[in-house]
Image 1 (cartoon, rainbow, N blue to C red):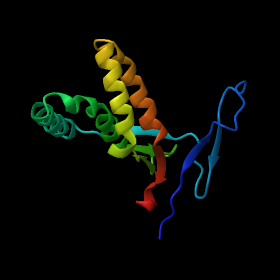
Image 2: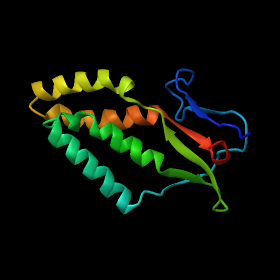
Image 3: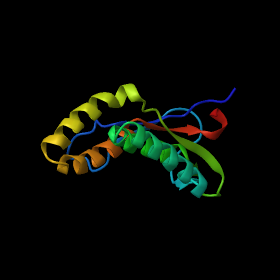
Image 4: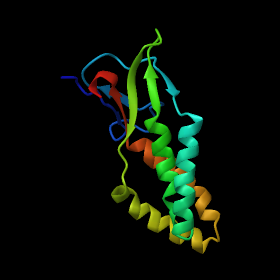
Length: 143
């Protein structure tokens, strides 16, 4: 049976004067000096866009508040970690789901409406940060 390796950021333990957060790695090979490569294909993107275009039409645009989360998750799920020798050693997995994003969606939908759309620009940055917070690196043999 394979093992699962998770990289966690100990931001609460890191003092504010420290330039880099502490990285704790548990089990398995070291995840230092890895290169991330996306294996997202053009047909993958096209299929994803068609589905979301249809959802946008059916929901009269409300799906656009959920779309950026799922777009980020889709890109992250197609990203792999390679070591210095070019061997695939890990994969990024975004564990975000609708339940964890619904509160943010409601809050930012209200802010976006009140600011006549300007709040949506800030929302885009917050989405990326939220998705990265819910992303972990898993060893390839754990899949």
